[in-house]
Length: 480
Image (cartoon, rainbow, N blue to C red; front, side):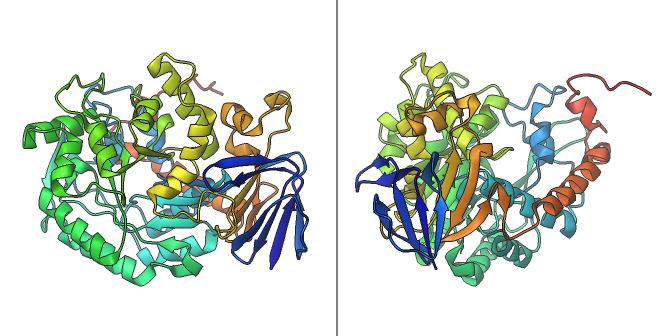
């Protein structure tokens, strides 16, 4: 089947950069873009995009396939010792708690994947989720219709909270080798499934949870499988201090010694590196090390703003030669808004209104994200590229009168402006609604699962705190 998209401003690819084609036309044949220009070529279906912006599908480098139960708790008002590791409030539970049910995991995975897709991310990287039925996971990828890079997470030690609220690490009995084998088995079984929409990538956990020998083994496995790697690193001050005291070097230097850095490796976050104002460690140039090794960074600005921190800075990394892509990590998984956050926080951090120009953050959400995944057929609209397209409405009262639609999308847009999403030449979001699944049903099941956990949170909390104690509501509820 062929699809032609007419009349919008098409963000085409010149061969070296994006370029705007007013009143353009885009032709997709099967799963591949075959023409970008001004001609109206014959097609089985024509989509009228007049007045809209026609973009390459966005790349979201950080989507955990879970509900926003934990994301909501990032604003914990009761503890002061997280050191920007606020995910410990849900990610470091008391030992011995049962995991979520299969039904809850299915609801979470459907909801998170659909949320990211609805907001314009045609490709996501899932760097680890709760253990569960991995056959279910693969089936859900096929249901939703987006492109997903994933394999089960593995690590040498887990994180727990004791009865006094202190966080501690405990070694996994096999130091992560069983988890690595599970990831390998998943990749061998499912890499390339659903017409290439489910793809493998090795995902060792957080840098401080993986011993050097495990990371070295992961590098060898990735080489044998011809896979990329994602690892959380530079994510919080607790991690930085743990590695510094254990190995006498900062996080990126630690990873470099294991051999894990390189052009096929993505670091989730890389916020707390030598030179960051939160840690006052001036004895290394870790940004240069990232650039020299060709390692990519998945930058998640909204998540860190929630916790009062920021990458220092987007411009510093880009100008030093680091490939930076964008991820959301936290809800609402809105990759369009994430471009604006990346720009605004960079300008505040640098004290420079010229920092993080629209072209750079748009590149981060498209071609630079694709580069991080080793896929030059994603993140651009050109003959031979995958038929991944996002159509966004920028003709809206809240935008003002638009002169440059890409700048307008970056400065004012959100995922709510995304009307149509096409993956591999298939329309999977139309008129803001999913075409493959019942979005209302997915929302209802996710809401039920989330409320059940929130309402019973005290049973799993180290201090028997309720959600309302951890994150007090903005205003009290009137009593009847």
